[in-house]
Amino acid sequence: MLEDRAQELRERYGISWRITGVASRRLGWIADSSGLDVTGLCGAGAPAREEPGIESNAGGGHRVTHNVRDWLVAAKADVLFEATSLNVQNGQPAVDHIRAALEHGAHAITANKGPIVHAYRELRDLASAHGKRFLFESTVMDGVPIFSLFDQLPAIHLQGFHGILNSTTNVILGEMENGLSFDAALKKAQELGVAETDATHDIDGWDAAVKTAALITVLMDVPVLLEEIAREGIRDLTTEAVRNVRRDGWPYKLVCRAQREGNGVKASVRPEKVLASSPMGKISGTSSYVYFETDIFPGLAITEENPGLYATAYGLLADFVRVCDRVIRAAR
Ligand SMILES: NC(=O)c1ccc[n+]([C@@H]2O[C@H](COP(=O)([O-])OP(=O)(O)OC[C@H]3O[C@@H](n4cnc5c(N)ncnc54)[C@H](OP(=O)(O)O)[C@@H]3O)[C@@H](O)[C@H]2O)c1
Image (tube, rainbow, N blue to C red; front, side, top):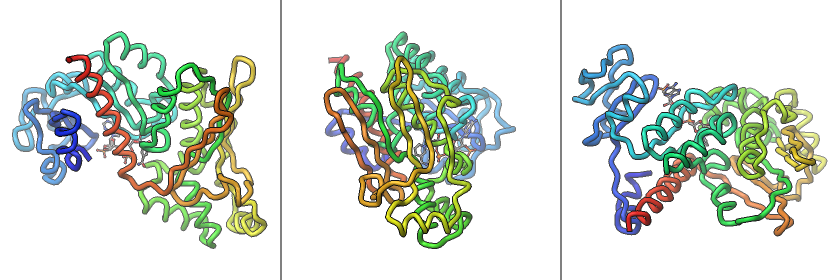
């Protein structure tokens, strides 16, 4: 996505970039502050994780480091993109990666919901203390501007929301309506690339609950624990049951709900039968939907129609442009 939009970023936004670090479990921590050939690096067989030593060179002369903090220094990182797998229990190692980036003096952008649910306030305050930005638009509905929409709605009060925020279960339920078994439908969702690495995160409602918690934490300013969200997945639904309710005009959807109650928020994720002709009833495939109830706009709905994987990458890119825009304005 960065390469795809490089010319536009340069000419329209005055942004040029280079990738100075890449890290994953298999690759290890690779950095070169003069810039990496990322395409070559990904294709060329990475150095083994067991080999690295901080001063050694590996895989085409790249400097390999031991940990995130050394890596940020070696890369001279200005911006970190954090996209490790979701850890619903504690948000790690993403929380540590983002904390290290902000303390290093880099902006942090993530697609990972874990840090929002487990460490939002800490990371927000840390970013602010270091004069950096912590952005996470890709965490809910891919790159659709949910969090930045509310940046444009100052002093508005969000009372609640409902919606369909997990694509995998939506794909599975749709395929079961067409007659596939649960397992065959899951396989189809995995082939589309939308399923979480650990598919139980989707099936048991964890991914939807984490997204619900992220929206509550950030937009309603109520830090909610995942355990406080009543959660039921789609594992126990049979193909027969799914087909029957669809035939009756009330298909099952995995619905997320949150509503203010006193100083807190009551929230749930569970399969609900929704009217087929209602907005939620019409959400199919990888589409998502959210309906916000605010004191100014009683109903404000957003539908994302069948996004591909580029939508998530786009959210990260859009956050990157927001970060650079702020830096460029400050420098003027
Ligand atoms: N895919 C989507 O549609 C989508 C949409 C919105 C948000 N997200 C979020 O975006 C993130 C990435 O999604 P994905 O589908 O690309 O996940 P993924 O297939 O699990 O890939 C995660 C990447 O993180 C690396 N990684 C995992 N644990 C690591 C660790 N402890 N240290 C260093 N690297 C580690 C993996 O490296 P190795 O392969 O070397 O192990 C892999 O490169 C997740 O948090 C997901 O929830 C995804």
